[in-house]
Amino acid sequence: IVARAAERFHVTYPLASDEGEGVSSSYQVFALPTMVVIDRKGVVKEVAISDTEAVDAAVASALKGK
Image 1 (cartoon, helix red, strand yellow):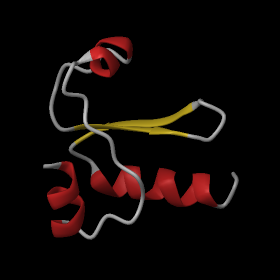
Image 2: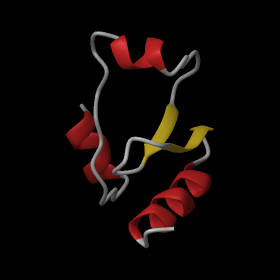
Image 3: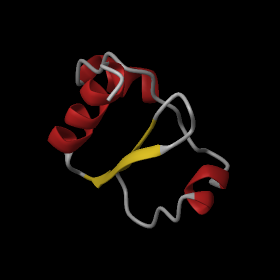
Image 4: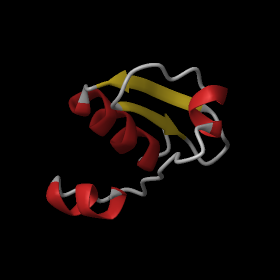
């Protein structure tokens, strides 16, 4: 499902699915879709509920190393 969504929405960054809900619980995700951008050091950079523009900006910033 995640792979199909990434293809449909032309997402070029890695996505993950939380079928066991362990990650959702850890990050206190209560609404779907919720997107969490985590940098390579494990720091949460953005949490957005249905705000793809905020997520895209956070991913672009993270990829630039900011």
